[in-house]
Image (cartoon, rainbow, N blue to C red; front, side, top):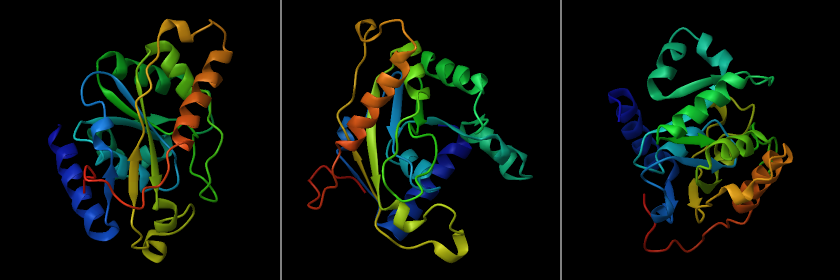
Length: 215
């Protein structure tokens, strides 16, 4: 890991376990080597760091380009593998960067819904993740986060609304793709994205944590 990324990884592990009793269920399902897409539902600003500490490998992720204009944060984000994307759409450069990262054998975090949920419920998948799968055939680890919406809902202010709610990430079985999954139509993108979102929706909260749960 890059030094700054490793430092952030350790700090968020401490932050997650101390304030949110953070747990990862079925960590053995993580793809720890080679290209991989970590696909997770999106409920809160807490989701990217919680996804990051769900694995020991270094991740690349996307963030809206306006964050890169902040004086301090804008300089730090590239050093922790955050890639800029235009939230208004039409930003092919971000998709190209993500595809390049996967072809280099690295892992990327993607939120198929594209934006944080307004009410905590799952949203429809956007076709972007399907496009990336079609171009790379990278395997996908479906992940579902529980508790982050209650801990920090959308539009909440950190200093006023951060709640010490337990947060859990449950990993699903990896999805693998071949050329047989592609028809050559642009409809492939939405179909593949829907398949990923269905896998995320199928993940259920675990009340009785199994022995292989990791803090």
